[in-house]
Figure 1 (cartoon, helix red, strand yellow):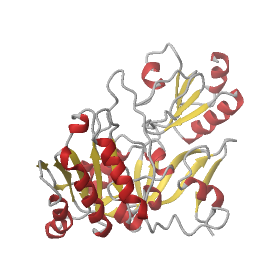
Figure 2 (tube, rainbow, N blue to C red):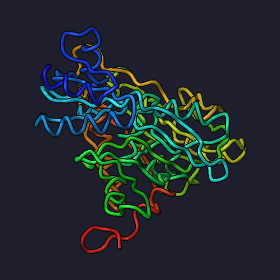
Figure 3 (tube, rainbow, N blue to C red):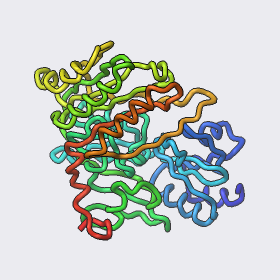
Length: 364
């Protein structure tokens, strides 16, 4: 590998991190997954990304691309392969103030984006964690605290610059490379390395955000009432019901209703949130008006010796009551997994990125 890396260095101005170097232990792992790649390449620019992709293709080794490094499945690292870490491509720039058009590097994180846009009164519907990468979240959909009002993160995407598997740099948008553009909006990885995203941001105010907790014994009624309320609640309200947290008592842990009201009008916020407060015996209530960037939490690694395994699924319509009943019964048993239920709807249901499909599954 060292001999071939010497050849790469002629075309690569970024960091080349090999086993045995001081940076390797940190560079080899992601927040949730350990790895032992043969080399980690940290490009300093787009030309470095192109050189890295060509190098990986010629090596025949597995290739992983890392944006923020949060993937539970460990997509940002590997064993014995090559990792392209985009951390140095992390700029955030407003390129068109009138259209609120924002250019974001493929290695940026959502916390940095929120901080950069806040002074301009702008935001992008993103995830709920500051250190999550813009790339992985957007390419996989992007559910966060503005989803019911502003849709998924990918719904605000207007263009992407992509290095393809043969090392070419292409632009994908509504008028260029439509097949790639369709695939990038929710298809996840394996279509190329996105070096830059262009988003249409939206004006934002401070938002009401916090948690309302109830006794574990009231879980079935709280969960059922919460779901009923969210069916008719204004799209400004996005909420998660979480319970059976093993780090807070397991089956005895309080039921947490986490929520964001996307607006700063206290009357409208109370009208949307007060029905949740009336669902049971309120133990705590820390809902306050906060800057949107403060809603995003810091990502934390699992405690030593603990490996996080996640499963997720969608349900809707007539299935919801039965699913909620099963989840409540499961959460009441010691040893239950931690459960978080998101209520969607609003703009998410009518997203412009999901028009009626054709018989092939492609947009008509």
